[in-house]
View (cartoon, rainbow, N blue to C red):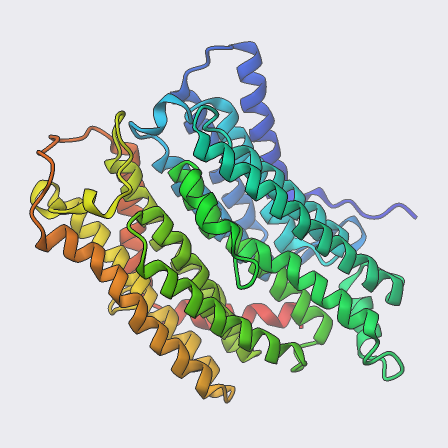
Length: 481
């Protein structure tokens, strides 16, 4: 029987694919196509994909015989990916990246990377998750190396490629082991085997699950699969680093939540203890390493590792509330982290990238509004009220307390205090240190500034009005339990 294709279910993915190919086709027809044309076309593609995603809300349709689903869980993550991609593209229209980044292929590859994320969130089939992951990974390898004449960018891409290849191999091997036990790639059929009393404790199931988590753990940069993040974020173009640190992490957690909740039917499992330890180590290693960093991009990279640990607290809570807090935190993290990277992009010039902590000295004297915006993002990343970061951590910790993981919450609070030191270090440099460089004058970067304004407004909005979003996100897991 021919499976029902139901292309409406994957219409957002189709929109992104067509946008990417349209940008490439336009480049072939008009080799010197204006960069000002590629950006609006890419933003239009993301907007159309968001509109199509909204039309699928509450439909819960399936496509290709159940390989892909458009439930509200997948659609919510799709919005996160589209928002992160859009803000990153807006931030790319700055002086520093204009010489090497703003070419049509950059926008096309970003569309394909976002397509991979949508597939990872929407699939209930392990091979489709793998294909989505590879589509995302290959696109990111290209984006990291797109600064072709910069040794640091090429080195970062090479490291990311090698470690990413190993992670993909682990993921594929785990899928193969689970298929060997269950005879299927479908998550529901695998769940039936996992809960079969005769096959519980099967070493192939355990090993397959571990390999699966290794592959996804690399994508979210959690311990011990975090080694690539600092070098890659530092070497990659700043808008690409913003895109990777938020959307790629969200895609990894989307696939992880989909697999864990589908296979275990929402029941607590032995993996909770493992992720408990991983969460603790991710927080401590990320935060303690970030303290010593003078490069702000590298600091944000180690910070990203710590935030993976915070998010894992919600996963360990193993409840609808915990998972809802994970989604809320990922949404909040997208705005505040893309915003922090966007400030770097906005301030960087043709001659110099604005990445060292000393570059931020006295920024409040030179550009008070930009300094205020950066301070908001630092406060939110640190978890201070009334920002989205504070509310996100509050719900993560509340879910863990409700689940009985009080020691984990205590460790999370301690790490938040550690993180406060290096986040406030940026604020102190901006507001309490004398500037080392002369005033550079006003900057005519309205598109990049729009990215900052959207991010800071959303950071405050999510921090002040979180209840509706948390309640809505809790309902998402009824579709995958």
